[in-house]
Amino acid sequence: MAFLLNRTSIASHFRSRSPLESEDALALSRRGFHIGPGPREKALLAEDPSLKRFKSHKKTVWRLKRVGDVVTVIVVAGCCYEIYVKALMREEARKQATTASGSS
Image (cartoon, rainbow, N blue to C red; front, side, top):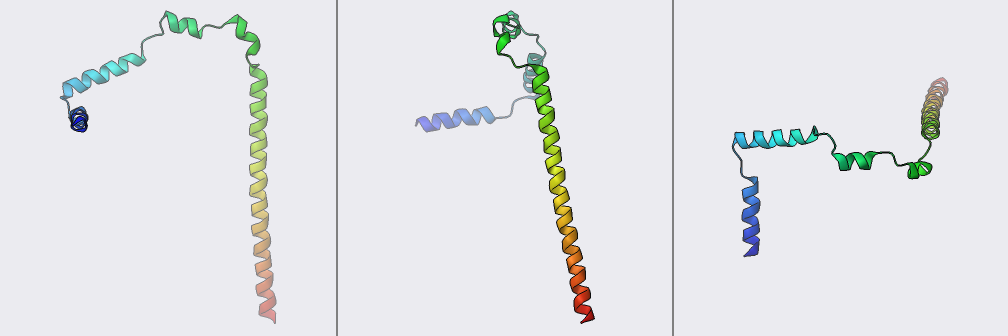
């Protein structure tokens, strides 16, 4: 019996609403994104001097990210070059095999 009650509440949730109600709900949800932070949020976002020593140095982190990006690009370029060389060698071997078999 409880299952049927839950089922009807789920069904009523999915029923279509009037366009006027949906526009109001949409306007309310949009308006929520443009409200500025309150005093509590501002206090939480404020910089805390006691935690300053635990924060990473931005320049060092940026430099480390840059080095990681450069190494990634170099490894990908090396892999592409290896694939190109293998394909080129295979093609040359195939050409030599066809010329050797054709001349025999």
